[in-house]
Length: 179
Image 1 (cartoon, one colour):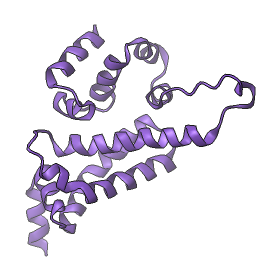
Image 2: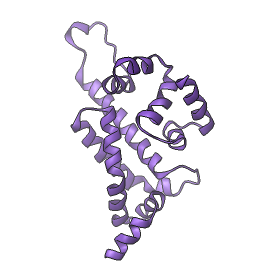
Image 3: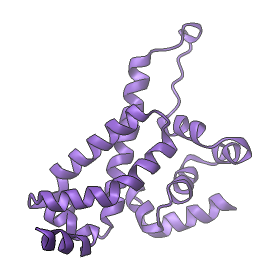
Image 4: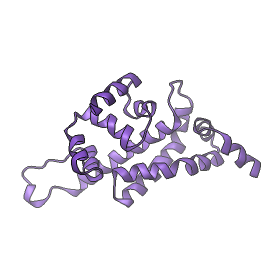
């Protein structure tokens, strides 16, 4: 058993996902052990509610277990880490939408209900001061790239996977946002 764990430890995340697609629980455990710490940190940067973070983590890894074959069978490039983060980011947005839907408008604003986009809510809770103000003034497509690359620490390639954009577009938007 020790040699199997040692062998899994040597595999990259893409190979682990391919094993997970074949139902390999040990590979799933190794993938979780490797990726869950940074996943939790990145989710907490976008959401201060530990209950939501825990739900998103659970939903993300359940989706990974169920859909690993979709990643493993794709001929499109992209990292497993970017794929995992894409799942988590979508689950987080879904969680914010559910919360906004069930919360209802505050009593004073019942006639003018305006629900900010989940990304705006997350950004406001995460980054404050002059930096937060500058980020909020950016066009949404520039802000998304900057958030993914700077706040989440994703590479250009991972950001491209997360946002469904070509890498060149990500680079261009990052330069524009930083300017």
